[in-house]
Length: 97
Image (tube, rainbow, N blue to C red):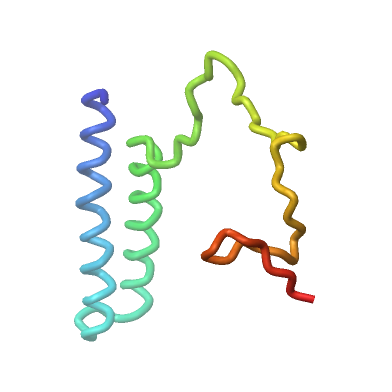
């Protein structure tokens, strides 16, 4: 991880708690609603920006060397049970008709 992403992650961490404190100040009537909401939305925008810079929304996957193999059921190896029959503890298949 690069030093830039680490610094951006720390800044995003601090911004989250500043945003949480602004919401608490609005709830306790320390800050009026409109200026408090402006502060919360500004802090939220900065928080999302720094989360993005830290790599929180990076969904790129590394390339695989070979594609995944899909296992398919071998029709020859299947048991003789139908979907309505299941083995009981004795190993026999019960017929639920």
